[in-house]
Image (cartoon, rainbow, N blue to C red):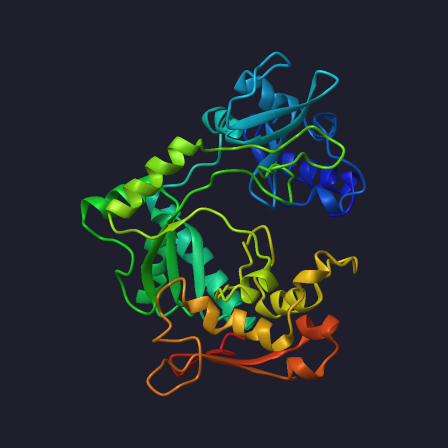
Length: 374
């Protein structure tokens, strides 16, 4: 959606089929691609009978209507928590809320409910769908940096039913799952080449795309340095706890690929999906060109060659999961994981790498794309 009016129309359509009082949820919103900033007033014009949340694709900010703010007890006088923010303009709430300040909304209003069996089926259906998408775009391994208990069960259910077509390295972002693993003496590395326990994921600050990431200098034109969601002491405690239980730790890094390569670091690629697209060919194009969807170049000094981008997207990607002896390159004794492309990325216009067709995806010697359903 590219305009506020389109967002409003979608919410109105959903409101027509939703009982009053139930939450209406928007997903994958990108404010940088909208004709103007979204506001609480815009959402109020769509519906006043339902609490509404429109979540940014970056995962760190959301927009709420007046009904949602009322249910949560948030007013113009409500102070910001230390790890979040209620955005205001001229002292008036705009409806935009960042980071952990959003937690209060999870405890109010009515939501569609599902039985445990329904939740399990929905999780499996979603995992199967994503697995098919991953295989179709040429992904042969995925690091899930937001794994929770439902994801773990969905991986197992899909595998049991022959529906899992992508190996997963599970970075845990769930207190419940983390505590369960600790109690069972399970830690990083447990599992096999299809489903493996990875590290623990912590979030210490905000998002670059949503301008809440903590910065050493203010964002241009503001006095805003971003938001910290963990104190330094909390970071120390969390890392000590994870390491004492033999877990790898992931907090955050920004991908200045060229600088990492020049320093001799085997930097991997990352989509950070949902915030970014997961297609590896798009990632390769981005690393080579450093262009956004409008053709603007960001950080030209971080451009890499096609060969370097392919290295980042293949062998470098397995070092963080300690699987460099298992996969990441085509060699004797390693898994037969590879992709067949219609064209050579070296021989096309760099701005067209993302459009190269994936003809075949093979994992462990088995063709997972195309399959009988595609």
